[in-house]
Length: 181
Image 1 (cartoon, rainbow, N blue to C red):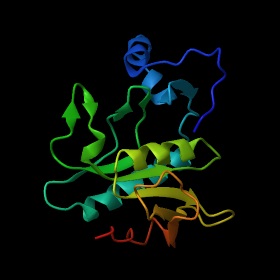
Image 2 (cartoon, rainbow, N blue to C red):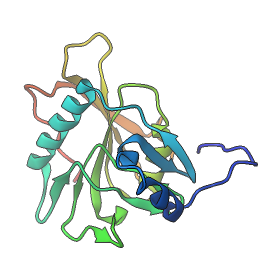
Image 3 (cartoon, rainbow, N blue to C red):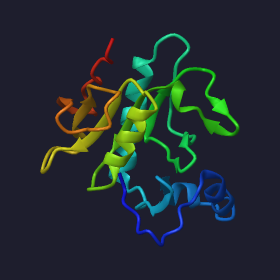
């Protein structure tokens, strides 16, 4: 969990959206996690290419009534709102202008740098999202070659020690791994 100094004001989702609505790119440049607004590095071409490849692969993994998404922001609780890079949802996803986290069947986070993704994984787990993938490039690997780490205990907020590595695989030539049953 992200630790905040005692004198720092925690922001609610409602306060965050009020501020973000004033700035056209705020939702792409910031995330609200545990009441703190974090700057997000602009997505570079590598990140965008990997996210698009994951999104395209998720199309083949959708089951009845599901669809892949790359847009829309789930509201996880009163102090947390951020968008997965790519995800699969059921049809009825909207509630009060937000994606309902309980409709997310698989969330994929593309991470090319060290980040606060462990906080996100905890939120995914708490929301009961049944499958979470962390997609990382292989160091010094071929462009498009990734490891996918799958959270194996979705009711646990702890990522390390409760996961399995799927890959390596090349997103240019290989299909994505099958989803959990």
